[in-house]
Image: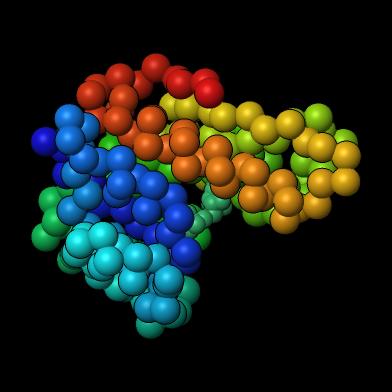
Length: 195
Ligand code: GAR
């Protein structure tokens, strides 16, 4: 059984989709939900699902990312995960942290990478006049939003779409894509999945 820690910052809807998928013959189980914001709604959702939670408030560390990450290691090492899933986790991890868990950290990003790394992905896709948007699950490397792609799901951009309407349809696809990719990853399959 693969132990999975999920890092969140907010609502945690991807986290919920992941936790709910890790049942039955799925070779992974959620063993920790860790948030960098104490008031993340996802913490309550995780507790309701019976997953242990922890908080490391990044604001206590100012700009010292390494001190923040050293604090993250406490609950993470206690949970001893085989796989770490970033699920709406809005802090950039340093190369040192990523290397410690090399090849074992996944992230979901709301664009068709390599398009639109970083923030405001929906507005950027709309401003560019793109015909489609989507989401990507990728392995986390030291470079932001650029590790090997493990899966993508596409969404048509409709006339009249706003960033919010597009975000809602992309999020629906995220909830399909991330559990499917995580399951394959836990089974040792890193070939990309295209939904
Ligand atoms: C999701 O859309 C996710 O792709 C995005 O934040 C949202 C989190 O929603 N992540 C990023 O932008 C990462 N840079 P959730 O907390 O409900 O899963």
